[in-house]
Length: 195
Image 1: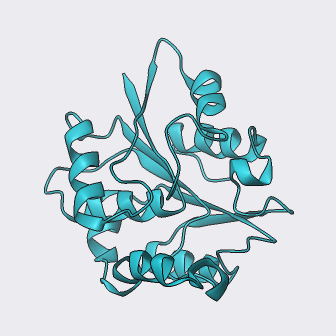
Image 2: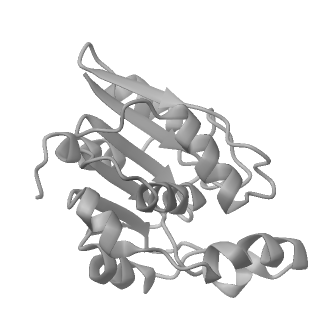
């Protein structure tokens, strides 16, 4: 059975935005979906989030898939770089970032929270050894994530990337409770197809 783990965004929870919709749309007799609330979501810390994700995932193998949103994407990458287990099925990263636009971290609290996520290196080669089945979805008008991040994910992870129009940070704050591209791209990942 395929298992999909959805990791929510900074200041979010498992029931926000498009996460419940995606679970309902994708789950089946052959696919089980896991959503959970990450710890201290207003001040996410790398160690705590990676450790918590690790506690939720059972038997990492090629039937395991990840869906991340914003900081949840980084959590997945940082989790994967620490695993010695074999390959996973793949990952869908929605509004992922390695760096943020100044507007996202203009207050001192946000800056201090984001700084370790921006400055702590990630071993992309290790992640690529786990899967070459990664797709990233960006929005043309994301106010937190520059479209230049798209090139980084293509270069560093060999990821397939797509851009949707005018969906902001692809979150509940932008009124995004469903997005066909998320379902469509995850379906391709589950079939290990690049289109």
